[in-house]
Structure formats: structure tokens, C-alpha cells
Image 1 (cartoon, one colour):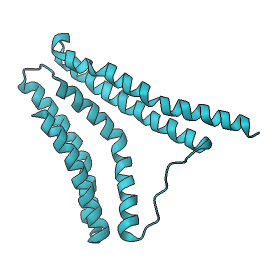
Image 2 (cartoon, one colour):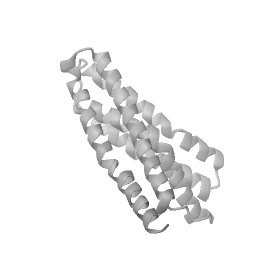
Image 3 (cartoon, helix red, strand yellow):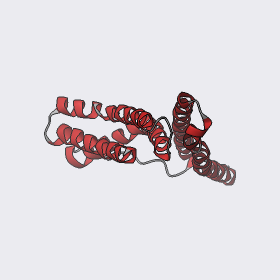
Image 4 (spheres, helix red, strand yellow):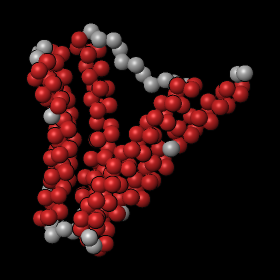
Length: 182
């Protein structure tokens, strides 16, 4: 059931964003648009409540879906607003004559800053996810009942380690280019 709520929250995110931007740019209903876009974070609260209710319904034995919910929440808290801004810029460009949204820098110091900033966001999302996992595990108070939660911590670490490849290789490439072009 909780997996369905997670999928529903993701679908709901894009439906609210799409409806909000449609109201803003195509229907010229700015207030309605603002209400719809402001409702996006409510989905996080719905997921948090559903996760806790599911934990209680399962007699406080965590499953993999509870860990997934925590990771999803950490990710949406950090990356959600940026995704809405991205969609808003593209929607304004396509339907309201707005300027083409800027692309990430292709190379050089600007690209290095961009990659490290994105990795920093991933670290923040991981920290929020880990905190949620830890809080749920503490609330359960039993290592056996919270094992499924804590099993997500190494997975988060692997994702961060893989993601780290991009800022490191971009930094190395920029250093090499700077040495070649004095």
C-alpha cells in the first residue's frame, strides 16, 4: 500500500505542477496557479503521515517501503523546488514567450561549481533521508523491527559515492585545461 502512496505522490507532484503552470500561463489564473503550486509540499506531508500510519498498522515493523519513503522525502525536500523552477521556466518559454531557460555550463570553472553544488544538494538530501530513517528507527526502539530502515543507509552512501564521480572528474578536467591554457 505504501508503495502506491509513494507513486501517487510522485504522480501528484507532476499533476499539481502541470496544473499550476497551465493555470498560470495558459488560463492566466495566477491565484489558482499559486494555490496549486503551494499545494506541492503538502504531498510530502501526506507521504510522511502515510508512512507513520503504515508503520503503526504493521505493529511497528519497518519494511523496505518505509525506507524508500524516507529517501523520497529527503529528495523531494531538496530537489522539489528546483524541479518546479525548471518546469516553470520551460513552460514560460514554450507557452508565454519567455526566454529560453539557461542550460548548465558546459565546461570550465562554472561547470565545476555547478557539479559541486548539485552534489552538495545530494548530500543534503541524503542527510535529511538519513535523519528520517534514524528518527523512525529510534521511534521503533528495536533493531530487529528497524533493520529495513537502517539497510537504506549504505545504499544512500553508494549513490553519493557514484554521484561524486561527476564533480571530481569535472574538477580534474578543469585543472588539466587550466594547465594547458596558461
